[in-house]
Length: 291
Image (cartoon, rainbow, N blue to C red; front, top):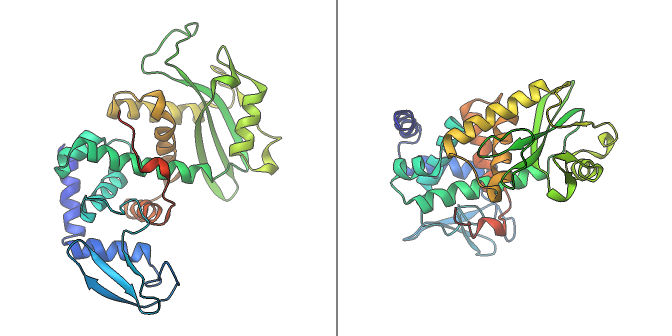
């Protein structure tokens, strides 16, 4: 918790007032200045209300707020605490959980889990729209809360396609995707599974070039498997195991940080807040499931 306390102190030095938080997020949402969501006009009155600051469009008189249409829309959690959560994520990545956030922000565990859940869901949606291209390496791996012998098949295990792509002008881009059981036969990935993965996550020009190496085959996949296993170790250490129901969103969460590893903390914070402010609001983020 000392590391998190130090991070909060750093946040307070960067965003010393609520107005500083508001100004930062205003520039994320409207980098070129205010735009009315109804008519796209560029000017508005600023009206201070009891709950939040309203912006009333000069042209159509439509009223909106900074958080309208974002993950924070109609949230009772102060905007400063939302930004603090994103700040902590940008510093600690996957090594911060809802219990730590609840204690640090003095909010309930349910609220902390809901905030992190919504952020993970938005990251997952963004990941679905980014396809692999260039030189692609892929393999099958297992996820289980407990390790079993290679010959033991458990219903609590999940088989995962781990893949990365790279090109001459870009660094590696990772994807870890849970394989539906219909595409497996005793841990062996069927042809239908390969086709399903390439159709959903690989650009059309590369679909004929991908080879997914089977479980325990290390050929040309050592770096990829090492990245996956190192990430899973950190995930289990922080979250004490993840249920199969939520596993995919955590895998996408891992890949978000692997794919942005070259970014500094400030750049990562900018990318995360931009995603949360400008990404689509998903139905799945509105009713978080209990865990």
